[in-house]
Image 1: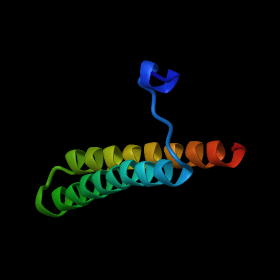
Image 2: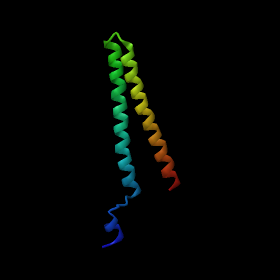
Image 3: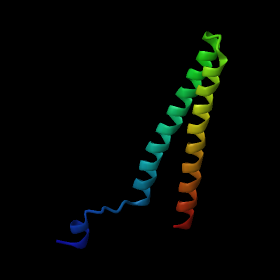
Length: 80
């Protein structure tokens, strides 16, 4: 058995890492978009604007997490 088989760690090519990260970031983008759209829907339907603004803020937080992950991954890839 080789050392890689014993530890169970798998190394990925840069292309595979990019594809995996793209899948993860795509989910964050869709979740943020759905949350913001739901917030705007609540704003159009309900008279209470507080709930809708909280939903839009939650979507904005998801987008901020998306940006942080994107910048971190870009800086990590640039160092390689």
